[in-house]
Length: 535
Image (cartoon, rainbow, N blue to C red; front, side, top):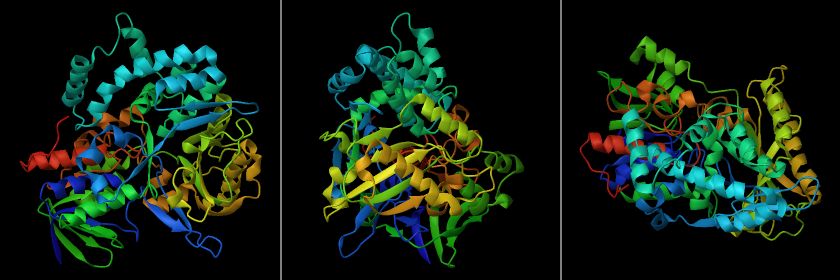
């Protein structure tokens, strides 16, 4: 039996963020990971080694683009560059090749460069985009601060108020009602009202859709408004693959006397006298701990690892009823002979540096959503392509390339009686076919691929029903409602059992805020000050 001050269940990035802060505060930290690789959905694996490609290809098996964590200060506070982490700037962070024509919109961290690119495709929207970024930047400075504290109503409004004092008024004089309408409106409506050009509308709508809710859903305006924050932080890719972030935190925890233990799926959290005191693994090993932090899905944690016998009927029912949704999307991780040459931007020298938005129009996306709402995979999927081998030779050392293509909207539960195991290759071919339409040179250039359907995502990462955000990112499941009001402060009714996953505020993506906030709660409760926490 091993003993730890803090035992983390699951090695996803939020759990490792919590573990890293606790380790730096002097806790002996243990991390139990069910898979043979560390990192949860921020993990990179070497695949497709052959005589021709002896080094294989470094394939991310979850998240790839790191944006929001660079807005938090976590990387700097934990000094993760000292533990092997190196980031490569993605500039532009995304590009929209115009379908059936010539031209491309590049979105750079630098706003002026972005406006210059927009002027070549959508000159009518240059000033509209400038005003859009100005408005949402003022909003989101306060919102970001609210994301970095436990989500009580008092905390959220205090942080927003501090932002008003520090950064100036959220709304300019006379725009309060219009501003509130944007915040409470849908991101589809916000885009439609703010811009005129159909290509710019499609680009911004498709990128906003990556957060989960459908474009017509209320109170999602800021999912597109967050575009303003990318002009502050940009987007980055860890050298060697997305998983280098979690590897760096593993290194940190071990350097501070902790252990990260793979191949150790937890069967049950040990609860004695309504207090968490350790965990049993499926192999029968027992780990004792002063406190337990679950980085697993909230339903897995409370309904399975804790169990009904330790919860009152009301909370059990609330957790059971959390909206997980019906899938999200699917992705193909491809090893390819060469990079896409987009018909609309042949030989563009920078288009492969960032995400490539392959969604021809808002109407095209709405048709895909229509299929999804019927419980069917989209006939014509919208695709987000990523080609990290262009900026990082570590992921394809033998001169070939990687191409990741993420698509939405793919229901986990199919209405036509089909099974994902039977149709995954068919649907993968549709996604690759979209890339071929934009870049005909990619026909016949596929070396191999790793397919992740919604069912595959659930099996690989424990993300129930294939929802990469854990639970739906609807307004009624955000802030103090995430995942339920009783569990929203990262604590549970079980003494010394905490939550730190994306099931909690502020939600999914490579963010780390849930892990940071959980550590903040634990350290405050144990009367240890969170080092360096000057926000």
